[in-house]
Image (cartoon, rainbow, N blue to C red; front, side):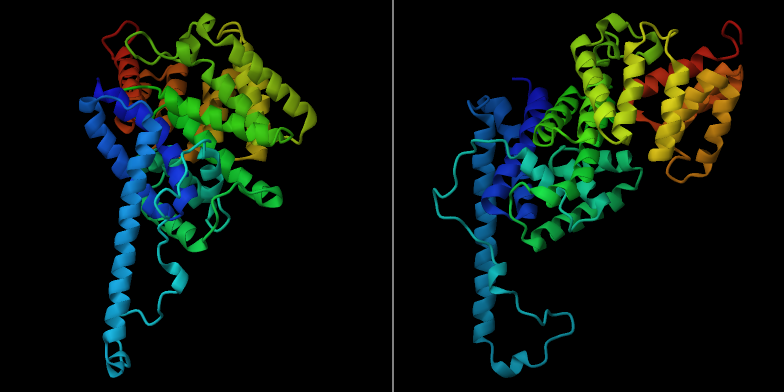
Amino acid sequence: MDPQPVAEDLLRRHAPQVLGALVRRYGHFDAAEDAVQEALLAAAVQWPTDGLPQNPRGWLIRVASRRLIDQLRAEEARRRREETAAALTPRDELLAPAPDEPTTPEPATAGPSVPAAGASRAPSEDDTLTLLFLCCHPALAPASQVALTLRAVGGLTTAEIARAYLVPEATLAQRISRAKKRIKDSGVPFRQPTGPERAGRLAAVLQVLYLVFNEGYTASSGDRLQRADLAAEAIRLTRAVHRLLPDDGEVAGLLALMLLTDARRPARTAPDGALVPLAEQDRSRWNGDAIAEGVALVTDALARHPLGPYQLQAAIAAVHDEAPSAESTDWPQILALYDVLARVAPGPMVTLNRAVALAMVHGPRAGLAVLEPLSGDARMADHHRLHAVRAHLLQLAGEREAAREAYRRAADGTLSLPEERYLRARAAALAPNRPGG
């Protein structure tokens, strides 16, 4: 068996389901995640040599459960030893504890609860959705909700999440660690919230799903442009949320956005994995069924619900998808939608994308002027996408040398090999010894 698919596809797909099953059975979110990681490592070692088990998810849950139970029993044994030692300690030795020793005893309920053998049940349902809402608990700050969910549900590494969030990796690691502790301390049960509680967590849930999808549609690092498994998982989960909340316009908008964007996936890469830009894609390879479903969803959402950012982005994607060719794209309509989006949900990425639409309508100089403030934005100043868009607009403006340098900076900034190759090829095409140079 080729270990690569095991490590990158099967394990990634099952990891959030296994974590959800453990948290539902035992609680102890932090310890459960450690146990799942140990089970994944064991699978990555054993499966390529011993063969794939008949029920991979059941195998992972069984191994992770054993790891977790062992860990909980060890922790309980440690606590009992400490309590016994404390009980045997003369009273006068307890009167003046050292400054760095805890002065408040642990509550009786703080110890681990190890279920009796056979108490756990085989997973009969997908716990991923419940895990998703758990990670978006209101006890956590929005940024922590997103980071924890991307880690636990999306299966993204800390480095990948840090790049998606435009923050240092160390900051993200601390944020995730604190989030897991808050979940543990909150004692929140493993169940899906209902009513107002569910509505309060929905914004974070949708943001998480969108970030997972984006990482799947354009991987932030590695030798593959796309990670179809992540994008598919994000779409699957968003469909599940849509089934829960069929009358929520933003849920419908996000599902439409994902479908309309993912519809282009078959044409985004050449047979050798090279990036194919939107304007050069073979549109006959786009997924017509996904486009039809996405257009229907966003059309209905815009007609029946208050306007929201996901609906607007879906509407922009629909305009692209419905254009029979790149040349016939209705850029004035796209620019108008971006103008509304910039008012409803302003942000650096919206500014970046609006600059392209503005350039296509009013010329590259207009787009470049919009980009200027982003150079002073700490989140964007060194982001490779800013350099890539600037390079494209400089090329359209006829500034070949400046465009070439911007393409180089963009290539230096990305960790995606297909993106890097594409950007370096664009830079090379602008070399002075090339025709027209």
